[in-house]
Image (cartoon, rainbow, N blue to C red):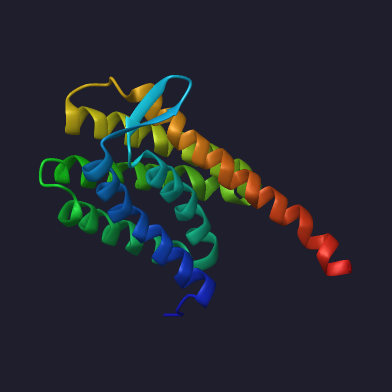
Length: 173
């Protein structure tokens, strides 16, 4: 079995680290504003980042490493979350990240940015619906959840697009 390169390992570590960060944010900060008068549980930004990092980890570390990271992330999500949120956090993470993976895989050959947009849309919706229903029994925060995670997806994709655009220019200089 070939081990991922340092960039792949760093991406996997960052991806898995978003899980405890999201759980800690929800526990310590509650709801936060996400724009346009909406609020969402504070972990929303870390979960949005996790969706993007999962796709990047797939590209840098491979399919097997990402599937292992999803399993590790699900376990961490359960054990590091506030006990009242543990089941909801683990279930939402496992389902959303797996759905993101299933959508991303066939689309990645068509282009990284398209695959990320499509898979993150599916992942953020699945995560939002499951987490809110299981954790709070309500969809009160659904618009804020979707908006907050979408902000992270769009920001990450914008940065990636800028980095890709600047690569040929810097290589020729």
